[in-house]
Image 1 (cartoon, rainbow, N blue to C red):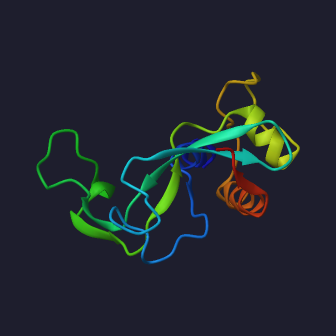
Image 2 (tube, one colour):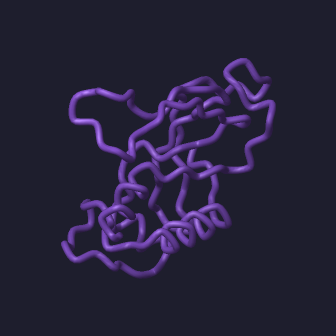
Length: 137
């Protein structure tokens, strides 16, 4: 479960007050892949995020695909009705500590990804992050 949680943390999606009109041509100026640093609370720490516009993609793998696992299908369409900011890199232990004031990791190192976190820990991080976020630009 904890190894799954770190994989989910890598792809942590942090929606930061996005609206339905946030798309590549929206008046707010966000474009697919735009990058922005967000400050973590009242610290000097930031987290790099990329803009993901609203849209669709195909998820899953087809029957008969080499090395396919049973839980990877069927292929289906996923739709994001709203754009969102998503972390570009794994959350480091230093970033986690700036938000959560703790470090649950087994392997310690400021620049190492945080690990040994649960799905609930990740949601708590997101909630705390969103409450204290500001643009560093």
